[in-house]
Image (cartoon, rainbow, N blue to C red):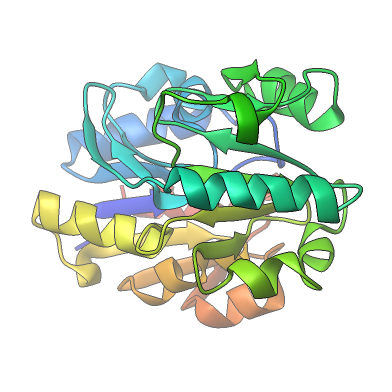
Length: 265
């Protein structure tokens, strides 16, 4: 019997970078909760963005945010992973100096920060994702005070390719790097990813992998999909993600995850 459902968001439930979700998801999540089945929103998104997306049920679900660095309920933080200042500031300096055409931002448990509020990245995060994001003129030189969980590199179409020549080879052994769609490369502390976050919640809730069902569409979902007793890739997922999942459900545009959730009722 499934007792824990964990779903990625962008490309799995909704179009990347939107807050537009079929409201029927909320009715089904309520009914699943009434049956004792836990629902978890699991994403590279900031917690405040996830909470807005699931506003009608925000107090009855759990959250894995910023690529697995933050695990919480609406009431309290359960676990947080952070990068050292030396690591993320040097990553920011390299992104600025050696990766033309790319932007970046950093995330703390409470909000995110970027250097220019007038960029496409900043406006997309604030206006479409619903992020609480603040402007700091020079993050590597002027930012201090909050714990940083993630630095994300952004390019409009080819982030993975832009990172490949220099950035990824230099940092891949120092941090966990995960492609999160064509626009993002999420960089988090070692041990902080979706798979480990799900494992933490399983132990916290007393639920086994065999009692867990996961959904995803991208590279950063693969290990989470492999480790669950039941797993689905949406039909729009990358080929390697579909191979990692045990099953494939319809496209996010067709509310494929919703159709599976209904069967669990």
